[in-house]
Length: 95
Length: 111
Length: 120
Image (cartoon, rainbow over all chains, first blue to last red; front, side, top):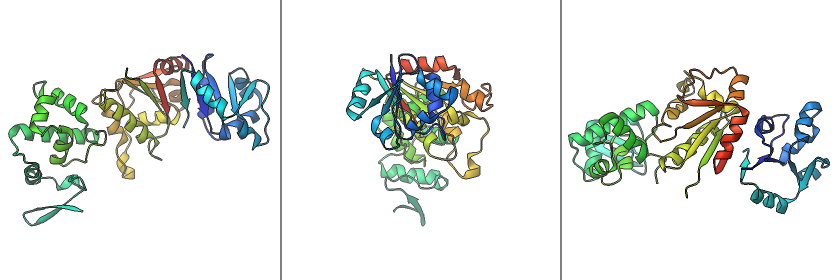
């Protein structure tokens, strides 16, 4: 079973991303959108803990913040987001 | 605003006929509300109403049908705690009607 | 085939409606006989602290509401052990009986087991 976890809160003011990373399995994936894309600004080991995961990032949320998609992640548009939601067994949105 | 008038006293009800204030409840109020539903309260009704008031004291919410049955079975035994018995007493909608007669808010987890 | 549902409740009890909303979903699911689990995580574990006083804020008593879970047929109750430890909450003597503390690995396995997950 695989889960796509969707996080939209900044890791600098909120515990959602940290908690999600703690329980993310190797079959699972993480989609960053909204302020969660600020996760790319994490430093040191906090950033390293992201780099070895299956990470997707909503491109428009990168663009608007003048951030670039790093090579270890995959940028997605909304149609690709929908495809991802179907590809994984379930979607867990961290509301 | 719905109002139940009982021996000169006005008691406020919500739009579905449930007491707005749990403390307005009395056996007379229960009898008046039961009469509106076409029910004459028997000892079998009263023990369920008392049970519901206990449930509310313990959990601070009104039970849906399933927890009402479970709680009744736990406290009064399975011959009372089943849907047949409770439906017969309360016109087929025990969670809603019994909560109303016991002075509790309308159960929120019921359709 | 009925789908099973896991609710992850991660809001603290007294400052907003999140904790009560999560519980309402669980109770509604239980009332309809849905296979349902409830996992307390992050600040949601503060809901499990014993002897809290809802009356001090004239609020509905969430602690009392949580006791109704068993009556609504909800018996699969979990708490994230990491979240408990982080907050100094002892897994012994929680306000709700029969809550199983889980490691991160076990949390992942529980999420896998349910058809749908809602995190609030």
